[in-house]
Length: 416
Image (cartoon, rainbow, N blue to C red; front, top):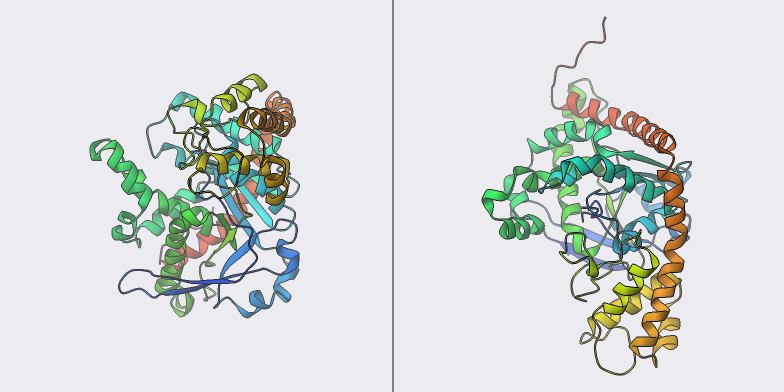
């Protein structure tokens, strides 16, 4: 991937309006009433995010009074396959930098997710290090956020297996990404990991008792599976059942909420305005990689797909490429949609492409410079990842201990 955990989890909409929707679960399962509400100011003012929160949230969370004294926890990750591109940056990593000032944040390199499809084994370790360096180069501050490699915390895989035993295969067969990718690759070329990776994603989130998960509206299906699993495990093994086995009782897992990011963060392909920018696209011309030099960026923008109508405009469904390129310009310059629309409405494509290229180069140059500094100091990077894994493992151990106990396992004696 360097798909976000969740593409596997990316993010969306700047709207602060209240929006309610009913998310149907399958037969025999309850319906979940969901309310998009704005979090208390201290949680979201800096980032412009909104929360997709259940109306049945604990009273302390709904009021935001006593719960506001302790930072809520956010967990997310990106796969280390391929080059991290502009879509990953604008859709996830850039927003992580905003979130780290407001939340307790854990960001990991999802190397275990990277092997769900055929991959280049000799390149995996290097790609993992490079992705970690990009996190830091983009502004993730390890004094505020923990950065670690997924496989360095073995609890991810342990919890996945414990969740798998209670995950109906029907839930997994419903996953859209599994259907699409298995259809393309053919059943004989698809490993079981492609079917079960949503359970690993659930483990990634539930392991750390996450309050929120940055997601896009197009990826809510994965988060809903995580929520369903949390609720099912709490029902099957939590409460009095857990207490009878010597536990403290209550819920084993927090049921995480969706954290919806500011508008426009879904970056589309440079060669097809209706498809997301992706590492797996066969043509490198379809994406801007974060480490692309100036001349490569200029060439890609010069050759990107455009259209013939005069002027430039947002939100015309007949002009998806125009909307995408204007949105990219808006995101990298930090201007409002109205400012960009006014500036560019009378531009031709030749003029706009030069302006967009300059904006992209100015945005990415500091990241590239910082990346080169980090990657040149392997000891520094190793220490960051080691410290991050140690903190993550400490948090994970509590959850893992509880679920082993609640499921009735005989735990290893500490007697020497």
